[in-house]
Image (cartoon, rainbow, N blue to C red; front, side, top):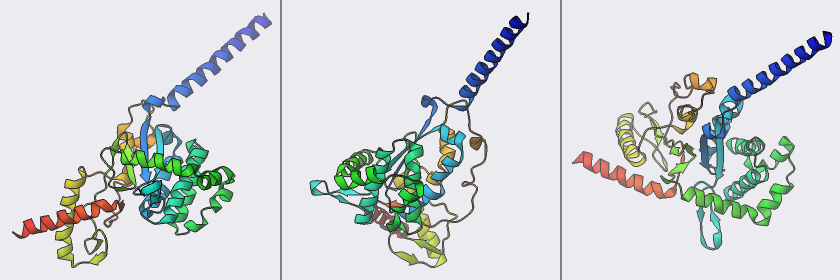
Length: 298
């Protein structure tokens, strides 16, 4: 009698454990097919890329539920160009080419997101703090062996990785117009400053120009019209979590997706531009501004 009771209790305990494990795994972990793809095309020394990685993208890693529905891909190439003999010319100079390659090597050396993102974050934090020459301190800070990454970027393989990222970036459709270029499930999140921006002092794509308030409002409205016609929809890359939640089709919805977006409710004014533009876009925008002003003056 005792042995039969013991057997029954053991069997019931087994069923309870089995049920608990199976139910928890199905409610917490989404399948790979349900995950939302999030791709970041950036360059290491663009201050706006660094700002996005340090102050926005890092929020993903503060929420395990949210991170579990995202397939994050980093592409450190940005607005760089390839010249003859496969040499690279980077928007912010040779040091940017070096750090792009270093980050590419880190992604290759530590393929798992949880392994390479802390290193990329560390380097970009130093960029954000204008201490990027100290980037090698990230190895010690994170307890990482620098050998694999060092051999990669000094031995030539890093250049091969960068050529791969260059091909991917140049093949984007629609083509990227600036960095950080954030893509959620194939849809780039365009950044256009709203009419709530500070009209007293704003940057006019190049040199910083201080304009009288009334003239600034008029020129800003023209610029906004030009940028909408150039870029399409008014979407904001800094509010990428909202677009992740909208794109997610799974059943295990993270709690963060049921909350209002903190960024979209923020009233803090921003100036133009919050991005590093490709140099090919500058002349086109200026020509459109000139045309728009000429049309308005007729």
